[in-house]
Image 1 (spheres, rainbow, N blue to C red):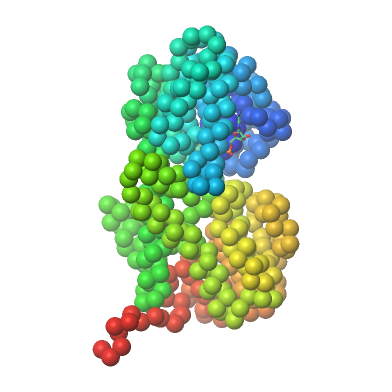
Image 2 (cartoon, rainbow, N blue to C red; image 1 turned 120 degrees about the vertical axis):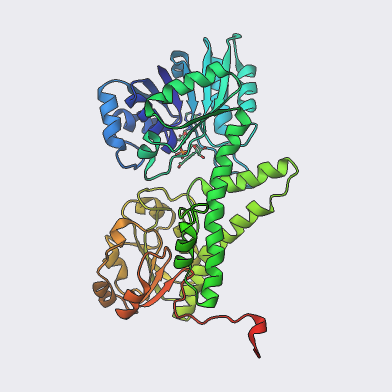
Length: 444
Ligand SMILES: NC(=O)c1ccc[n+]([C@@H]2O[C@H](COP(=O)([O-])OP(=O)(O)OC[C@H]3O[C@@H](n4cnc5c(N)ncnc54)[C@H](O)[C@@H]3O)[C@@H](O)[C@H]2O)c1
């Protein structure tokens, strides 16, 4: 099948490459000529495990080509996937200008029946909006259908997730269009759910919002654990054994970042309000999450007696391991707070440093975790990359000015570090910190 994928970011490029690998002829379109150039040379503009290899194979076999010419690509294709960004506006609503732009070009380029598949994450009702835009810009009255096919891949395992998705959701008003999309995905042999457009659009936001809710929930529990001498890691573990709850997304820590969860929960809250419904639940998920970096930096400041002139080393900057993506990464807010309070910041990340360097040139970027530890008053784990799992803490302790370890992801064994002579802080772990008694505890 001839397929156009409009937008070659994390979703578009990985989707395009996988569709090509399944034997389709794929045109990957982007407005950024540098990205297009890189793709055609077999160098992925984004870091995703396994992507370069798959890209090169499909370029060699001539099943994939990148271009900036969307109109030309649309004319040659039966199916056009929209995979452009939907970044948040300052109010938190998703900015649909890229989707609109692509829809206008599709409308103006229609030269026969086509299926337009929206894969970008968009509020309920956007399928109808795309349909109207295409109708308005159509030069000749060619038929077309709009389908919603939300994407659930995770950055860092995008290729794997695209090859083995938990489910494929196809929202379409016309069964003929739905079946064509089923045909594309059939070789993956994964569960498919065919539904109407608004249902598919809501499934995406409801899924992400629920995962974010789990994270904020366990972080709220972590606060209570810290005050009572309980250990949130064990609370979460025991909760997770309950098959009705499950252990995924139940890790207390610095909260969620990235290009999806924060933006999608905000967007969902706006959608809900547009239909005159109460968005308090969704706003609370965000409020709990926003407080995490502030609280973490407060803990460091408390321990060091203020941050002015203190050196804080950060391990990891990407919003999660195995990606170079720093969009809404917790590291950015933590760096901002540390610098605001006068700290000297050193940092290391296996792949994300260049992106952070562009925003914060004033911090020291190191070659590895040990260099970060040199002369540090506190070391803070921000992103749980594999290479931080087995550090030589004796060596780290010897390099630091003071052995203070702040574990933002509850990666380490508190007792082991305490035995080595570290002050250890883990989120929601008893930590030997001062406990706060409830008001009515006096006099019992
Ligand atoms: N990144 C994820 O993990 C993920 C997961 C699921 C869903 N999503 C959703 O998928 C969508 C895309 O996300 P992403 O992370 O791939 O975005 P991205 O920002 O990485 O990529 C978007 C690409 O679209 C290109 N673009 C913009 N306007 C264009 C136009 N008119 N024609 C052609 N290309 C154009 C940009 O240059 C960019 O390369 C978003 O709605 C996002 O919420 C993302």
